[in-house]
Amino acid sequence: MSQFEQVLGAAEYRAQPLVVPQVSCRRSTCDTGGAISFAYRPHREERVKVPMREVVCHVCGRRSQIPAAALSAHCVHCCAHFETASYVLHSGTRHRILRTLGDVTIPKGVKLSHLDIACSNLTVSGRVSGRFYATQKLELRGEAHINGDLKADFLSVTSSSRVVVDPSVVVQNAELRGELQGRLIAKGQVRVYADGKLLGDCRAEKLLLDPGAVHAGVRLH
Ligand SMILES: [Zn+2]
Image (cartoon, rainbow, N blue to C red; front, side):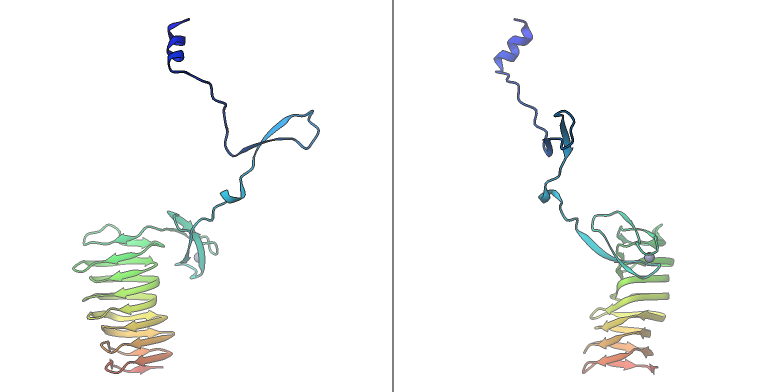
């Protein structure tokens, strides 16, 4: 007995049968002389549902579903390509032009100009200028100041904030719990809550002013 065999014997080595999981071994249905075919047959419970999320295309504006974990995606309607990362922009950032299905946040104290941003949810607390399009929610906080072209599906001005849009913001619906200075153009409904103030002209299908709410401006039609 060699030294190697002695070591194996000491460890009580036993050969184990090779088991290949998820591969079925069955007799072929066609006449192959009794040959065994190995075919991959996934079990029904293996077909797990991939978590999806709904996104809105910046180019055609239509909705589609993409895997929640996708790093980039194509619009199924117009084939436009987007990344899905989210960004927090600070002063001096190199990300001035962004086309993402993720969210973008511009924190308090940040000053940026010549931005061109299209994203899902946009939150602004700083002072910025450029072109902005949020396919879902635009949230203005604190003393946000936005100069330029501003478009969103839904606008929210948070409580205790005093924000400025110059010259205007175009949205589907809006709710104001703080002060908004500038022109507000909504295709749907605008609701100004009790502590909210709308200091500027407003065009909306429905303008709801809660008791205590202020609207200083002209109602455009
Ligand atoms: Zn599209």
